[in-house]
Image (cartoon, rainbow, N blue to C red; front, top):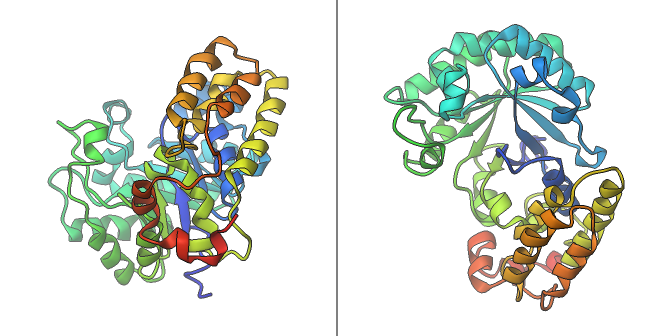
Length: 354
């Protein structure tokens, strides 16, 4: 494999607020050994003035895992990055892409694209504070500052003056006024070509493409152009397809793990966490989309959603939900296979047998 094929950022799951917590990442890791996993965004204020352990503790099985930080003050970013390294994260990522009002009010996230020198200063301070990679997740532009030349100057400044070598690019601009975060993921036009062009312009840097990547064949095609891809909504709305990532994107020689094995291993984790005082509801949330497309999936989700909050330390809730399913190892629906895997991929690959 070429250096591009072995990039640590070849396949990544995106930071997603209220979703990519430690429990989600444990479940994802059970399905893929090679994916790079990202935390929800943690603000520097939360680490400087809040419960550090609550924000930064994670399970050792999650590696490789990156901590995403939100902030703009270089000193606070450096201190927060150092804390992240102390807790064992493999990478520190700076959020320069979130367009929410809360983030804008804190003068960080996507609005930082207007001040590349501040981003460069923050990256430089973080790199001086830690030995792990410091990366940036950004958009291709904001508001009417959305030309390729402006995007290129931003990258040149953050790389040249900040020393950043890895950029994760959500290939849409962000409207900072008038669109919600959800609309900002859907309405601004998708410009994968910006990421292709920036990789050509800066071949010494690593660019990871993020934005409406939905099928594994589609991702494999993009990996012929850029060193890495990052997947957001597709990796939580239908988490089950992560079981196929290693075989299709990394040519792994081992077979796809079965749903039965995934659920059994996750149950072992869940029961161990319950014994340490965790609540059931927080750990069943990642399971809700694991069985999409299976007979009884709706009843499975309803049982977990209704019973887990009421019986917060009773693992039998999950066993009861599983009993509501039909054939736990049956194929997913044809629609789901097409959307997530592409036509005939499951049927034609010899590696994808249970």
